[in-house]
Length: 348
Picture 1 (cartoon, rainbow, N blue to C red):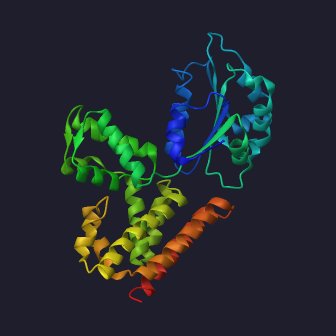
Picture 2 (tube, one colour; picture 1 turned 30 degrees about the vertical axis):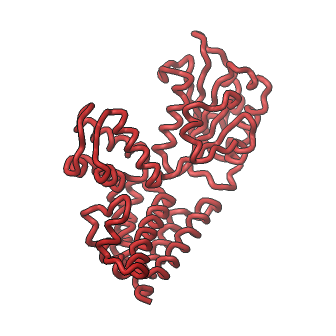
Picture 3 (tube, one colour; picture 1 turned 90 degrees about the vertical axis):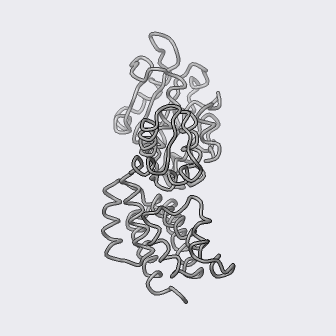
């Protein structure tokens, strides 16, 4: 079964009773870990319980394929259903996991829950296709949170801690979180510790607490591309790779930035609004530290060049996710193309 992004959170909270194995994969490694952990704790309270929780690597299963079905059907000495985590899930495990899903013993309600932690698997992945098509399995993709998902994450975190914040503060927090769910959780934990249960957060406190280095690297990369600055773009990309940012996350962030520029450009051209008025309508608002740079870009980029750049970014994302091309190289070429459009296609 293929779990859609919209259904993912509810599925993780309450998987189908018939599901015996779940593949969690995607470029957002923090979200992958979070969902894997949440699924395990539905079955086992203490993940340190060696009788009910077992972790096996893909390399171990290459040398001993039958071990996975043995672990899945084994009974816990203390009773209770077991959880088996397979790490490094890739297409080399397709045959092994297919045999597990087809084994008659897996129909037993007490059979172990097999969770597979995969990487950024493309649409042609045989492992992904297996889990999406099997009736007793599920595949959950974990991609970088969009603005709407980040708003939900921030809102839920503040509400659970009884912390109040004005809408503009929430917008600021959302606009300054990174692309990795696990890192975002840590940033929000700092914020809730600062405010304390039942407290409140203002804009100054949010600015002092939220400081994700990966988010800064992402912002620098996107701004350099939109500025048409080749040298800064090369430097920013090196930093982005060192921060572990995924190419898909960067491509999507670049698309979001250009879409916001398109909104501002369209309003100033069609509705005769000033740049400042158009920028104020954006949600989340432009971060004050980059507002001057954004304003300069919005004043130079026109709708047609923005659309050309967006097309290039979208096509590259599709290629990266559906083929085996080197994703970092493809991402870098797409951003260089954006920078080139930014230098030569403005005011046309």
